Image 1 (tube, rainbow, N blue to C red):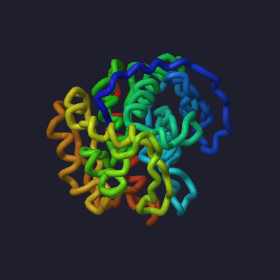
Image 2 (image 1 turned 180 degrees about the horizontal axis):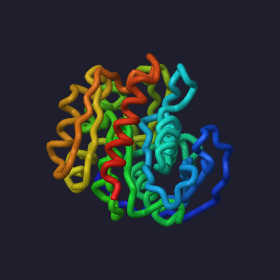
Image 3 (image 1 turned 45 degrees about the horizontal axis):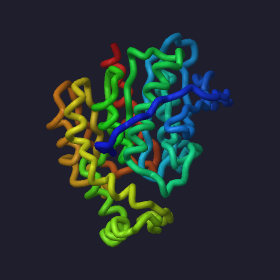
Length: 299
């Protein structure tokens, strides 16, 4: 998701810790970190085996998610972790990050705002460009759900040339989507709070707390306007069974309508998590289609 706030995020390279690689082609999977506003952002970088200066994809997770993303029950593997592995097997590196206030990165979840996530996404591209391990002239971005909204904003604002952007089930009207997810009473309570975190139980049972800053930034976000600033290839994936971001495919199509450049709308009979609870078939089709679209447009 995106917002119109001043961004002053400068990425500084920090500790890089080698991690055991679970996949055959992931000989150089690493845990990495960099700083944004004095706080640490943690990520996992996958480098394809035997490929010098590979192209790279930045992955941005969704609301309440983390860098590996939702675990597919049938294979016990996160959707983003699976995508990174599959793309590495095809010679493409990736970096998946935990936004600040999520996962292993610094901060409490209650302090989450879309502005902070946009800062993290922009800083992650700076980190990749300065890393010396990937080709900074062949970079792409993938964002899912709220991460898709953040991704649209990052694409419109970054100074780096992105060869392709893929948005999976992106929120094109963030305030409306979050009103549906959180409920109108929670939204009203968030705005009425004088600074205290508002507690809420999400539709899937998770209990979280959010401070007023989160609610306020929802109305400063316009991913449709942001993506209009990006004129390179755009891939938007939506599901006709999505009951979180809807109606579909209209909610995805509007981003393409305001984007000027080569594009593809990927529509399938899938839910917001790409039918992951039914197995890997739809997830793998999406990962494959995304990888093919990005590969086609890498300079």
